[in-house]
Image (cartoon, rainbow, N blue to C red):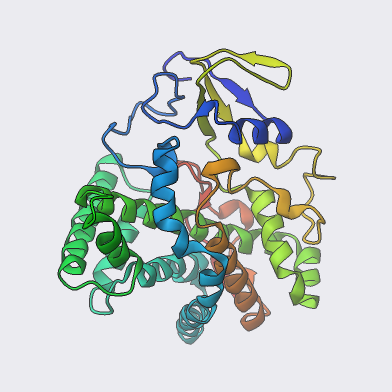
Length: 361
């Protein structure tokens, strides 16, 4: 690594699941042995659910689980469909060409999480500007920091408004049920809202855009999906497996000596789980081929595995299903407007993405 450390690298599917599902591997980001991908270190006091161990991790996660159940997420389908249709109405009205990222993929999860957090219609434009600033990975580190400061200020003001007049939304529930009862501090509520925004926005937005590109690159699979719309849920899981949006690696540290795949990992040693590699393991037949009908596509670990498995995975699946189904149905002649090599793929952040996807129809 850049700092001279030499963590273990886990690349196999079964070994990755073994590490991610084993409580003897810590996710605590403040642990000395935790792999550091860059010189930037998140301060220890920053509240991040993904960098906690049980029992504190389980305590905080229980506060949020009710908002991401299958039943509640399925009930959101009409709302999400309305947002998708509105975005496509505007895109179609303005006519080709359009940018699939800026005009569709990024605004969609932003609007969904805004509804969940209880952002008012009057405040949505400000929320959109603040969130887009945080998600722009083409800017400098200083500009990113300034954008994050704007977002923290906005969420803090929104929390103050919810404290004064709570509603029936996720942020209000965190304040009423947790902050006012001593379960969370004001700063922790703000941090939790930011984590939900960042985790639920960037990954889903990049998956929508990359899935669109990938389907256009595989016309035979696209034709298969158009012919059988019922294939969409499985297709989304295959896309999640094939793309594996988290590219940087998932860090853990051994809390005690643990043997994985016949290799002893001593206590205190860092471990990096390579999710893209695990999702291309021979566990999946012809793993480097895109197969929207793959029978075990749902077994991918694109959302992680174990107690830290993505809290919003059901919501992400629903958003992807609705976004892709509607996009393909309403724009049957959708095509890339530039050669594939002209697309700017992003690797600057933890998640794999694409900056701009010019399309026509």
